[in-house]
Image 1 (tube, rainbow, N blue to C red):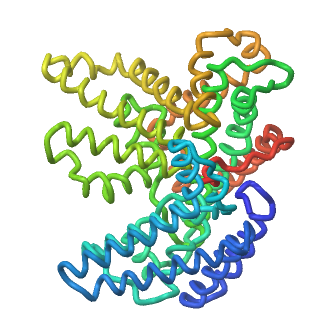
Image 2 (spheres, rainbow, N blue to C red):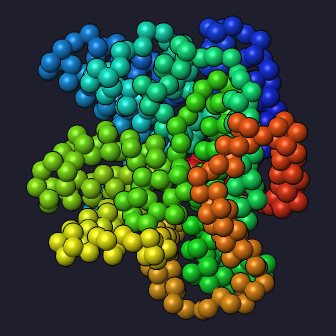
Image 3 (tube, rainbow, N blue to C red):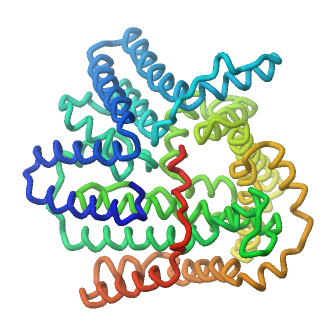
Length: 470
């Protein structure tokens, strides 16, 4: 069930009503059952993998907690190996077989398997790893209730595309879950409507434009210039994924749970380091805490820090998909992060901080960072390396002025959203709707937004959420 379909919202409405009538523990059992129903709609066979992963990680937590010193570390290694093994088999087996076969000049046909990629496997395996590590570090006691642990892994708002939820953040909420307040209801509905607007109006508008370039087609009878196709994908992936996150957080809040933010206006970042503090925050912090810091972080010599950055970003790229294009995307960001560190060293050495960081130059740095991020999206979106190279070569060709004149929304939407972000830089208007606006104003705002979606939604296209493939 996709978040932008009536089937999901019927399912969600019945879930909210049904759970409200149940007491605490029965509601958890029902929520686990609903989560498996939600997951099984994609493919009922996926439920067996989800259940196996849940049981294994539940037992790993108890197993790790009971032992000390070396045995404890060995058991953590087994838990991590299990989760990575599940991920590697379902997501990367054929990729590595094809890569090694190409390297050795062999035919991969005899070794390749017809493996169906389970939806959300990258997310729930990472949550299993986080749980095992947190128990090992004694940041969290192993969970005794199988139902509570099953709810952590399977909770449907974040099951298939995140955000990645930390165990230490989720489990206390199970014990302290309170009744739905008016503020919770307003906040949840606000995020849901905002997310739906981002998806069905904004992301789905840019999606066919990006597809037209990367698939070699046309959009409404016009050719798409390379730079317009790249720019369109930058818009699509942000509105699509942040819209999904908004909906997931809103649904969780209406069910009594709070998810941390996953985006903080990343295209307004003034440098690449700041971008990664704002983009897919749950993944970037996961990589920092469970990979970068254990590798040594920035505690060693500078070359080791740079190595760690490249390892983390390269693996973060591959986490998104079984393709060298994704690894290239991750390594490109790793290179930019290293470049930014070197640049800041030069700025500090010359004493230029006051000039470089002046507010007058901030628009330039924001635009520069956005261009770099957009260029890095090319290997992420392109189907293969040849298409990536062709897109870079085509960026200086064909002006696309005719296309922009015929499709004014291509430039109007980004300008309008930028203006909104500047006018509501501290999100006071959104907070006002949640905390202080009268019910009449809240209802009127929701009705207006629904009417806008009815008029401008791309109803003639069906575009799955981008991150559902990961």
